[in-house]
Each structure stands twice: as structure tokens, then as C-alpha cells.
Image (cartoon, rainbow, N blue to C red; front, side, top):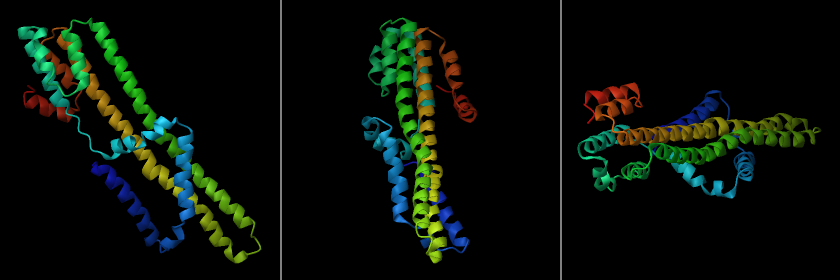
Length: 259
């Protein structure tokens, strides 16, 4: 579980509750089930309507990406690639045939296998980057789902406000309920803003972060595969791939000697 996501959502919600309490207002004034249902489910269904059903079926998968903690072992992949390059340089690239089956990452396994099979470097590069492009397209579908939902959330809040105002104006003769009616009408706007800014936009940004992290891992693999096939010096390969790492992580990796 990604603790940062939980802390952000729960902490932000608690902060809103505390601000209401500190202001001296009653929490009951901000509770309206009908408005909540309209904003959450209305905006969700509008988002569903804008996407193929196959996208909605993946909703659980998107939520898993958001809440599950992912740790990409960049240094581990670099170490593996450099060790492969050392063996290929000593014994020839065909010597990697027996080691490919031990790889857990399908993308890296596929690339190394193509290199061992003697596939032209340009063809390998094109095949791997096509796979990366398609991966990006799949990721952008999920990102776009939450981006659209975040956009229509406040809009449904406004719809609820307009519905409340219509009802209030239809009963203008009852002056005693005008203030409470106006407050109730504005609640859906509040719900829409909270839904979009506290939950949906951070979810979209979290998916973008997951996408960037996975793409970086795959790009390291592509560079490593092409370098192995090109017969580059293992030390040079290590330096090239270490350039992908953030400065702090790169420094630690270099201090420990890499491989």
C-alpha cells in the first residue's frame, strides 16, 4: 500500500473537517446524501459514457496502480545488464542464451533474446520502441479517465447547485427557508471541488508518476540491450545507464562500485 496516497487523502479530508469545526459551524450543515450521490456517481457515469466499456472494466486495475506501492529497482537492472555485457564481451553474445531464462522482466528478456538471435540493431530498437509507444498509449487511457472525471466532477457540483436554486426560487414565498436553501444548493459545488482537487487530480498525477517510472525502467533496458549487442565496454555501459538515475541514487550506486 502506498502510504503517501493514504496520508494525502485522509489528511486532506481531516483538514477540511477541522476547518469547519474551528469556524464554529455544524458538520450537519455540510452533509447531504443526495448531493453527494449526484456529484460522485453522476460525474463517474458521465466519464463512463465518454469511454469504451473496456476502459471502465479496468477501473479496478487503475485503482490498484494508485494505491499499491511500486518500487522499481533501477540499480538492480543496471547491474544485471552490466554483468550480461561482461559475459558477452568475454565469451560472446551467444553465451547469454542460458541466462535469459533467469530474467523476470519480459521486456528485458525479449530484447536480450533478439540480440542473441543476431537481429539487426535498428530492428530491435524499432520493435522495443513500438512496444514502449503502445505501453504509453495504454497508460494514457487510464490517466485520461481520471483527468476527465476530475473535469466533470465540479460541473456536476454546479448542476446540483442549479437544481437547488431552482427549487429555492420556486418557493420564494417561504422567506424563512431561503438562507438554508441557498446553503444546501451550494453544497454540491463544494462536493465537486473536493472530489476533483483532493482525490481525482492527485489520482491522475499518481498514474502519471507510475507511467514515468515504468517508462524510465524500460528505456534503461533498451539502452542496455543495444549497448550489449554493440559490444560496448561494460564500464561505459554502466556509466551510460547510471546517467538515468537521480543524482543521489547515482552517487550511492557509483560509491558502491555498481557491479
